[in-house]
Image (tube, rainbow, N blue to C red; front, side, top):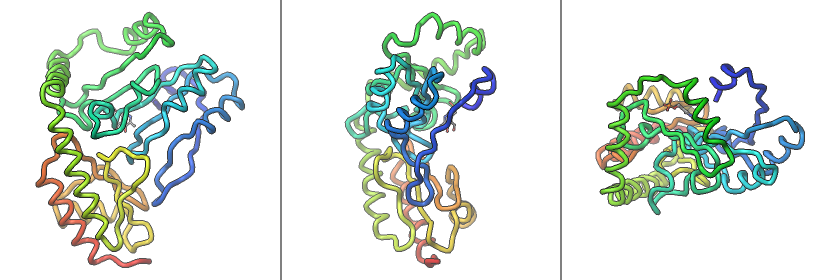
Length: 262
Ligand SMILES: Cc1ncc(COP(=O)(O)O)c(C=O)c1O
């Protein structure tokens, strides 16, 4: 998103959602979008990241309705949610909720090579010709066939045998979340989130998110995805197995025992 702003010299209007537990940025509300549109009538496109890095989902259906009333398109950065809407075990994704353009990175949560993002154009609000022109301008004219083959093989795999894998992934996540309730100091972010993202809250304890990330790396050989002051994020994907969840659970239990409240 920031790259588009820079390349095209756009003048962005940012919506600053209220913070959730641990200082995690919350969802963008349809009301906040409507307010921004009223305050800045020159806005031509709304771009929402959902789910966020921390897994927070915004109500894309309601936001799309606000925009479409004004005949304005919605682009959703669903880089972290390529698995959404493909199985009843995970929430709906933006493609089926009314977004006009949706970008997904298959490689973040699904079995596909890095750099295999997809752009979905849904409906006719964004012209096919303008989109094709933009792709011609910004993309290479020599697409990588290994990457295209990886996308095809990922999609074929999901169509053929995705469902049992989604069910198993969700079952592992639910079991992990249940076990995490027994932790005394650390908590997992809950609410309107992608259940695949494990955002571990450490606010109120004597350990910061970056310290938790370093501790898991150095003492337990586990690499988290990112950390901020009050939390750290563990990413899981369709290929995360029992052993991965078990190792993280055991490590968190060990860390939790040594923590104290501030
Ligand atoms: C919200 C968000 N959008 C987009 C990207 C970039 O996606 P890609 O890996 O397909 O370049 C990232 C990368 O982490 C991200 O966090």
